[in-house]
Length: 395
Ligand SMILES: Cc1ncc(COP(=O)(O)O)c(C=O)c1O
Image (cartoon, rainbow, N blue to C red; front, side, top):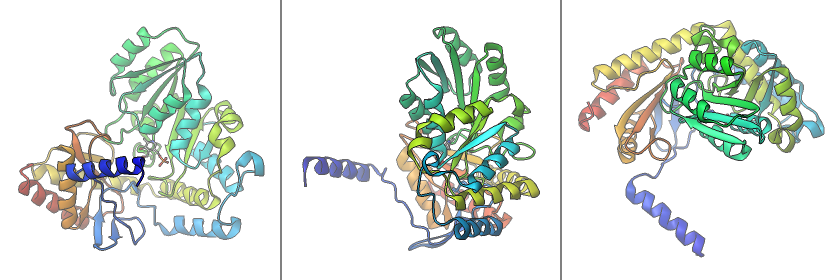
């Protein structure tokens, strides 16, 4: 064993001793309200991003399968070298129509989309302002993009953003970037205040709505629709790996010039393969399912309300929020992992998150609801939460 291997082995042993080692189950079934774990059998799944229950929806699967036959297994190239596929272009048109933007451009992940966007828009004349709890892809994207100035404002705090903007040097271009729904808290960005501030300063507002699309707003257009400011957000990024079919992929939607510049010069477009056509076709079918059956959205929110009411009756206090993410803070990382394991013993899968994903002392079990969950499944999950909370003195 060389020096590096010895060092890594010691790090892993320390994680094991601290009870912070993640045990990643192996799925033997499609994603859905019930999943089959190797060695454990079926469990109720409360932690996928399959908010609308479309990950294994027949129309979505069929669209992907048909595209596999029609277009083959993959793209086998970068778009500008060997061409883009019709399903990618069709999906981009559908996404732009859904979000009522001029254009959209797809990537193989929203991580890539965020990194690409920030990198392409930032230069020495650019200042970027980012919410403290933004997704890791935005944080890393800002690091890579190296804008002339960058600052972090307190979470969801428009007054603090105003303060930070006031203290910033005068720059030619200002970008304000925020998650729409914050993935660890389940709360929403204060978009009405952010929109007003951006408009007053001539700044550009970028919203990563990965957890809001297909979840919030009357038609599932996301956090901005929820707040009635959908036509006032400049640029939206999002994933296709959550409500919109759950496969993979991400996109930027916004002005035609933004998408054109990204296609011309963003590094993941130039140096990485495009979205596989089968995934693009699956995502198109997911968008169509959302458009054609808005009852899915209502079912999702009824499920959120049922679970919240149930765990509150059991004495737990989830964090507030209008999204489909219901975090239940339990303390230290080892507590979150232990609660998650105790739930799993009772046939309920809800993952625990600890440091460094969330700050020390605020480790949590994060529940995510899906429209595909039945009342009975939610009630069984609530029962398990109640039993574990009582056992561990959490209620
Ligand atoms: C807010 C947010 N942005 C971006 C991503 C990354 O999405 P993808 O899985 O498409 O890279 C996630 C996924 O966890 C997310 O929660």
